[in-house]
Length: 387
Ligand code: GLN
Figure 1 (spheres, rainbow, N blue to C red):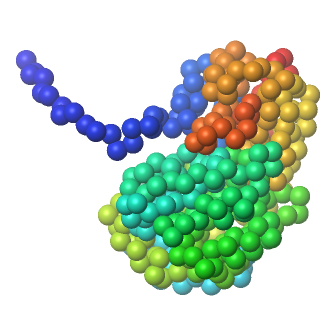
Figure 2: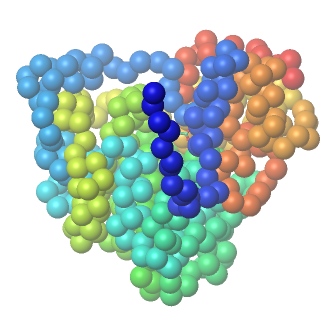
Figure 3: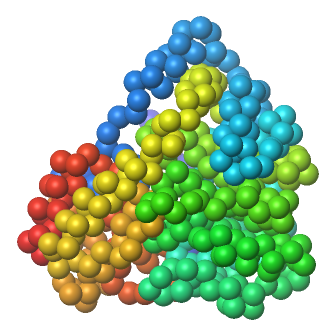
C-alpha cells in the first residue's frame, strides 16, 4: 500500500494570481463548443514553406542544443529585418537573443534588471503577465492608466509616476488588448521624458506587423534615446501564424543583452534548434511580414462591420488582431460574468477587459481575437446577432 506523505505548506510567491484568463476561456470555449475568439491565436495554418524549412532542418540533423543566444543565421536575419524596417543596426553576436516566445523574453528581461524595491511602470490595461513578472523580481508595479476611451498614453500621468526608483517602463504598441497604436509624437514624448532618468524600457512589439490604415509601427528602435535603454521584444508566433512554436526574440544594447543572457541561460538555456533554422530560412523573404497588415486589416474590417449588425459596439482598432467591443447596451453584468455567459449561452468566447488591469479603467468592454478564418468570424457574428 502506498503511504501518503505530507507536502509542506507553501507561502505563494504570487498570492493574487490564479490561472491565466487565456487558459480559462479557451477551456470554457472547448467545454461549450463555442467559437473561440478569446485567446489570441490563429485558427488557420502557416505557410507550407515554413513547415518545409523546419522539416529540412530536422532531417539535416539540427536536433541538438542551439547556441545559448540563438542560431546565428536567425539572429542575423532578425538584425537585418530590424535595420531595414526601423533603421537601427543591432549586432547579432552581442545584441540579439532568441527566446522561447515573447512572454519568456519579458519575464527574463524583468528578472535581469529589476532589483527588490525597484519601481516598474505598467500602463493599464496591459498583458496579464507583466505585473506577476514584476512581483517575481521583488519589484513594485506602479500602475498608470491609459486614457479611457482612446487608450492613448497619458504622459502627464506617466511623468507623475516616474520617481528616482523607477527602473523600468513597459510599453506595448500595437497594444493588446485595446488595438491602439502609439504615434511618432508619443514615442518622441516618451523619449524626452525618460532621457534624464535611469529608467529602462521593455518595448513589447509582438504585433509590430499588424498596423492598419497606412499607419507605421513606431518601434523603440527608431528612437536613439529609447533604443539605448530598451529591450525590443517581438515574436515569430504572431507574425507567421505559429503561436505554438513559442519562438521570439529580444534586441537590446550589448550591456543590457549581457545581463539578459545571464538570466536566459539558466531559464531556458536555448530555444529549439530546428525551428530556429527553419525560421532563419523563411525570414529571408520579407514578403510574409510585409503582407501581414493588409491580411489582418481585411479581417478587422469584416469583423468590425459585422459587429455593427449586433448590439455590441466595436471600438476603434488601429493594430493587433484584437477587436474590443462595448456590451453595455446588452447587459450591465461585470465583464467576466458576461464573457462566461456569452460562451455558455451564445457560443462565442471573448476575454473580459478586467483581466488586463489592476483597477477598472472602463467598464463594459470585452476583447475578441479576429485571427480566424472568415467562416469562423461569420459564425461568431451570426451568434452575436441574437444578443
Ligand atoms: N497573447 C495572447 C493573447 O493576448 C495569449 C498568450 C497566452 O495565452 N499566454 O490572447
